[in-house]
Length: 303
Image (cartoon, rainbow, N blue to C red):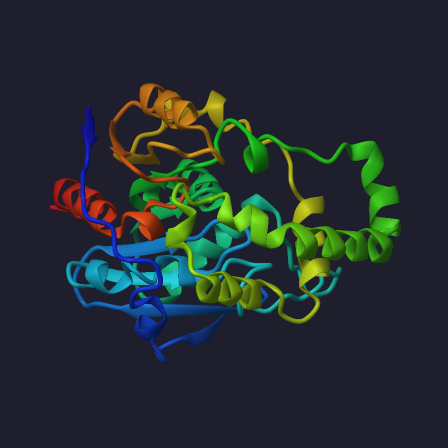
């Protein structure tokens, strides 16, 4: 089923910064000190998973509205935002692998006294939402996949096994190189997530940059990169037992709109929403359309 939502877009630089809340808190989960926000008191539990190079700030324009009809948790994924960036060792069991991040999502759900949640993931957050639903369907009620990276990028990249020992040995060199490259290209890459670049203010872009570049951030991102491997999600889609909503921006250039169309064709129990005048981040560029689609999905999924 396909629906196209036409909604008014907030003016550039509107109340995002004002809506930042002092309700952030930390919780220890699987070796990470996870930074998160939680609001609402209604069922279901909705867990928001942001994309790479971003933070929980990415949900700021939709967080409170979702909390009106659900209990909502948004958290900074490992290697991003204010969540701690411990280095993996034989003693702490810390891992930045996709599977470890999936386990962290389930542990976070349980630590808050819930047995299930609806997972809403954008970009690589969508990769993790689908991976978690496939690995732990008993703990997931449904998934919302927003410009989800399933057939490309994070979901299909892999560091060759024969190269890993050398790359790990040269970690200080490679992490410094990654720091230089990301710092140089960051603003351009983030602006590329937007269809209408004027909707991303310089202040918000600078805030996203600050969220990422905390402490030894490039080393943590390097550890995440080393754990990247082909997840084979495209071969498991038809076994997906849960209801799904696929949302794509009409002009998404990061995860091509055609990839979301393909995802909607291959998932067995799915609805597709195309958001006009929008790029890779519907919750940022067209928050009203995003809220409308997700609220409608939640009403159908959670009885």
